[in-house]
Image (cartoon, rainbow, N blue to C red; front, side):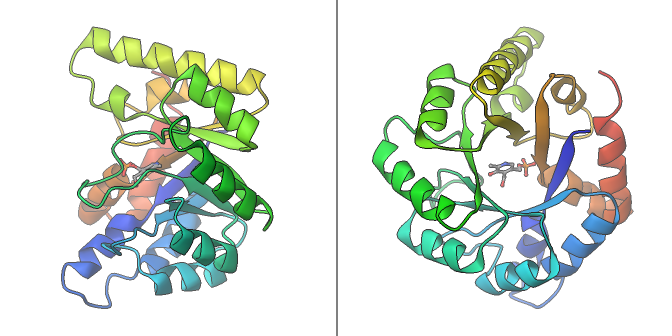
Length: 240
Ligand code: PXP
């Protein structure tokens, strides 16, 4: 069964809209886990636009064995991660001006920075995933740098406007998955997945984990978080 990591960042986005104390992403994480989430994913960004340092610390106390921290490979984030010790760290690119993470890491261009980050996180026994484009060279270097997993970005797939664009992006995801598995890497995917486009992704053999945020939290506003998480688990296991 493919694991579902629920990204709870946007619960914090609502709180930060008022700089208030509610809704608390920690409460959301507990409800998500009780409703069938396998992991909780959160992204502590440099500008602290949603998740705050306190959220990560409290989340670490409450969520056992299932905490995935998305983070940029900066000194500040590495210090925080090495002290809080999430179960898994997913290294992502980060630019202040972007609305959300916009593409995979370029581990060819940032080889040394990422190599250093991997070394520091793995020394703390943190499972290491790299968020990359479905590109065979990026998969190769991820393996050489010592990553445990790659999270293949599905933004290109989820934003495809035509049938043929969609098919082309799915083909890249399939090829990168097969290659990553042959190199001994675990394969995760995420970005832009929703209740309607997730089935083609779960149909790809070998994918172990999906990280999904915006569509689940959006549905949760209308139907409640427990229902939204349960419905996503159902959608993941419907055939495409
Ligand atoms: N995976 C990664 C690496 C991400 O940066 C994000 C967005 O924070 C997600 C998954 C979830 O994306 P979405 O909110 O579009 O489901």
